[in-house]
Length: 230
Image 1 (cartoon, one colour):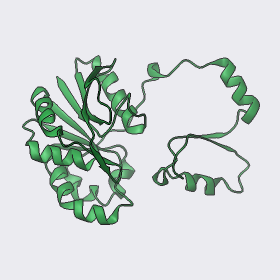
Image 2 (cartoon, one colour):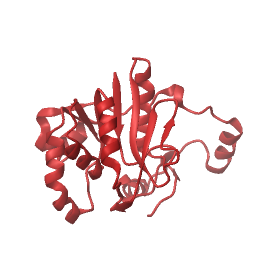
Image 3 (cartoon, rainbow, N blue to C red):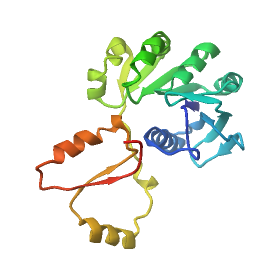
Image 4 (spheres, rainbow, N blue to C red):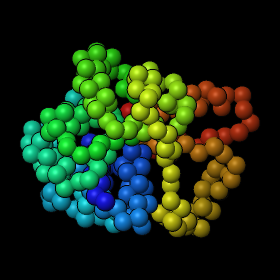
């Protein structure tokens, strides 16, 4: 089986939660005979195609970005070629340009989407984009929610409840890096061994402000790892 994953950015250009989720899916399905590719954008797509351990990576030049959504003026033809190769197209939401690609290309095969998050802040853009989003989600053979709570609380997902499947995000333990004892000892010397660890890009929708508020008055400590705009 050939599966094409579609998302706005991927390794080695970027690193993040959705990228890692795609990597874990691809790694874990190799043993079942699945051949994976990732269609994505890059500001410097040289070379245009890369082979990683888990998947072939097909990169198209990103020409501009609106509200963190990358666009490629020349992406449609390459996207059509990749969907012709694939048995299943697996979209990772949100990426509005990916919605447009799907609708313009008329992808002939089965299509699924993993719904990673709602669009929260861009209310005006979301209002303009909603007809496209509704057509895109309505055309999917399956919409994957990553938890029962998300499926139950998302205002967007509730309109498509009849086609939702729950598939939690998993991590394959064999993919973890080997722990470095010297580094562990240095962390323990600086922060102790009893703390809550937050790792991620510091963005508003990560809920870091909720964590810090919840920790007030607690005897526990939190260590925050990462960087970002907040």
